[in-house]
Length: 85
Image 1 (cartoon, helix red, strand yellow):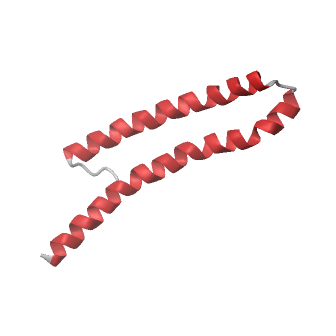
Image 2: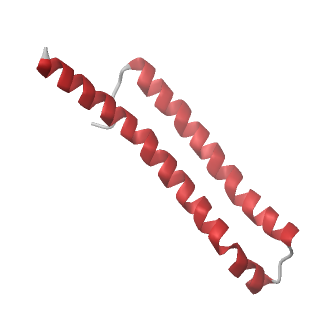
């Protein structure tokens, strides 16, 4: 019983680690762009509205990627396959 439980917990942890890493990898570039907005403003002489466009143009594709990865992760979770190992 104990061995089965340890294997089950390890499998769940492995499966849950991928979404955590995915969110981290997805939001890290968004944070980088947000932090660099003042430098972009000074270098290009951009207004606040222009910076909003820069931020939105970067965030929207990243959000689409995160949603797509979430659907793929859900499909793997529900079918029981484990492509990570």
